[in-house]
Image (cartoon, rainbow, N blue to C red; front, side, top):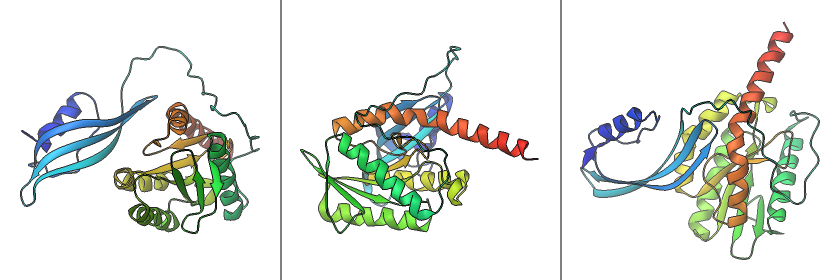
Length: 260
């Protein structure tokens, strides 16, 4: 066995900003990569860590990590992937919303289009904002306009629903990808996701961000769905998020400079 501290040092030596959320002196017996998804400039991994707890003995825990990865520049401009959808929705003129109601309606419009495009049929259900049924399983979705108290409440609802309905269903929480037009800074939005992603990943609850301007683009910030068609969609679109985020930050900075 090796200690958590040694494991973290090993990750650091490989240029990975991954740290196990355990005490440094905990003895680790095994680490398996359950899921790995690369995106431009980084990688997301879901690890299964087997370790010895001084009080509880042998334990196993799922840990979600996201880290930048340095790669040699090839000098090639990265193109933004076209969303793999049959029924493409029209783009919006901008990224702002008149109010929370418009934002919520847009989120439901976008995610419903994606689900139906991938073969799901919408059904009525009282315990989630949206519910869809596919050939093999159902998909529960809650919608929140910000990563705040409402977002936390909606996430807790999904956790309770999963405990009640079981792991054979899929679960997801849907937000706008950029929430600054709705009053929440990008920094606070990303802090909320970072603070909750490990727990929600373990609970198999996806956190999706709908592009503010393009309803055909939905990014996954935690896990991908199990259903093949949905999984393939997110594997194509989600790695584009860092590029879109960078463009937004650059445009925001230019707007501030121009406004002086």
